[in-house]
Image (cartoon, rainbow, N blue to C red; front, side, top):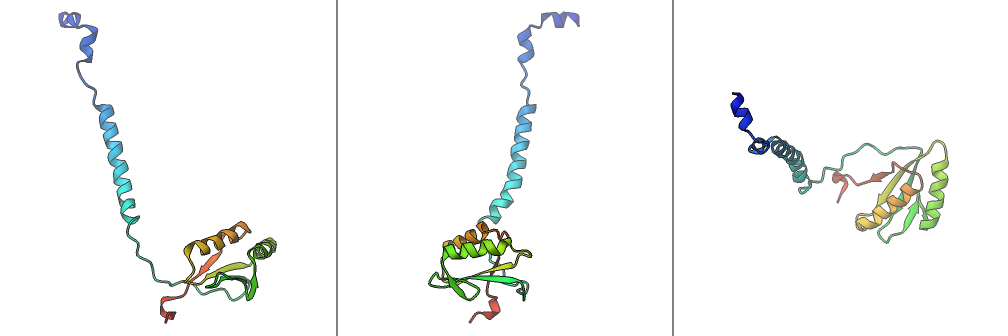
Length: 139
């Protein structure tokens, strides 16, 4: 046996390929694809849920409305965007903070409603409620 070991050169030890790192990489990629494939499926098909929600609060709330012609109303008073921001900052500093309901007309573009929500968020209302119409109420 000692004779075989003496005849080996240092290069003879490299005649075998170590496949352990290759298998580790293969299993890592397999696991990554197994996790991401279901997420990719749900990202393409969209089914809107029914519009069932809790009842609106009866007290301590403020309503911001965006009408069809892009007029902004705070409760039932027409205000400009700058005036709305100033009033909302005052309301958010008040204790207890009122719940904010954001209503947008269905014919407005998505961008206008999101712009209004961004304004509301920048004024200190982090959890504004977007009011929608229930399916059974539509005509």
